[in-house]
Image (tube, rainbow, N blue to C red; front, side):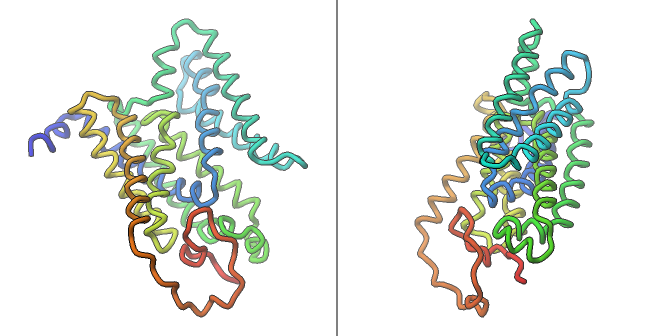
Length: 302
């Protein structure tokens, strides 16, 4: 038992565990919609788009968190505006903004001769350096993400599976998409200093994707993703302590391993018979990228 509990008797590991649990909850709320809407590339672009703000804040002696938030707002606004350009796909606009923001960040970093350590922390995080102020920020972010998720749930579900139905129900899909971008931004900004921008997608995408073959509704995906993220945090910190590996990268690696185990188990389980549902006669909305149906995940009906 000493092998299992010993690392968590150390104060900074305890704070890292609490911080990881909070990050897991925040990323589960935002990551579920990222997976259902196929927004993984956007999440990656958003996380790297933080670099200019963090770089400027570090060079000016300001708060990297504030700089990251400002940069994320610019990135989200740019994705929304450029995405409305005729004959320009969303992936193209995201890719252009991704490269532009990342290039700007590298240019700012290149103006400093002593930025290497800060840049390493930005890319890979430092979960073992989490302080009490970081935990407070994460707690506030979790409360805000929970409120947004609860208030926008119906619009988000309709938008995720059938944008035309969202229009029909008067749910304003463009506004819902903008709020989803805000939720994604909140999760990334709150999490990047824990696991880093290169690894934040591990907790943002892997746990929700692991739950999709097993969950019967969006809330179940979120709850299961939070549990998987928490277990990845615990196991990652434990392995990192005993194997002397990078804590943030180990947590993300465990989360990705969970995904492959989940998919393997789902592929080996017997196929279930189709459910006889009364609503089957109604036209079905387009299926999500995964093998789960929209009805299974609770898409609202008119």
